[in-house]
Length: 264
Image (cartoon, rainbow, N blue to C red):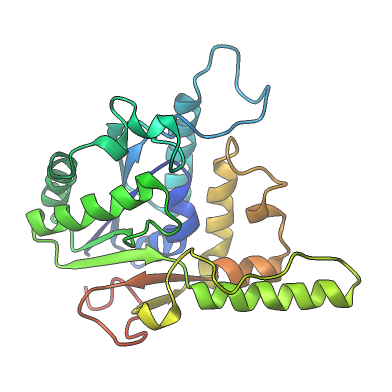
């Protein structure tokens, strides 16, 4: 049995990008540990969703534990930083925000968990945090440094396959046009994720999509039934979320790994 520690910025991030590999590792008999930098204080929530006087962070922590149970996580830790909000907002600079945190100090916190767990694998994010969110960028910086401090042997940067998503959007736009539905033009210069040529691992998680979707539903304050994630048809969900993509330094070129826990 080996141990995977998966590091994320906010509640709900864990199930979107890594829910499949987490459940897969659990089913393979490995230990899965979830570490979340913030409690998602600045998430958006529909009016009337929370009970009177209930803080959003409290609900999001509870949702994280529910999602973790679905995904087979055996330990959940929050580092205690404050959600920084989207890039360019005043919340970026608020005291205690993850964006303003010392990378070295935060890395020491994460490294302590990696050492306690004798972690074999760490997941964090790519250097742009997938789409430029300050807390996601900080997860990359902190995660990579923590792995250095703890000597964690395998570090995978979770990302999106930009080319795969553009192909999917084009196909959907063509289907919509054939059905007489007007769709916005697909942009070729999208900035989320990384180009396919930079990816080194692709994990087929279609077997675990039921768990992934249930984990998303556990985050009801952020992911409603009408959201992009849950409202799309089964075929679209499988295309969008059935493979989880990663970059591992020193691997490649091209996709050379299909299981983060292979050989462990």
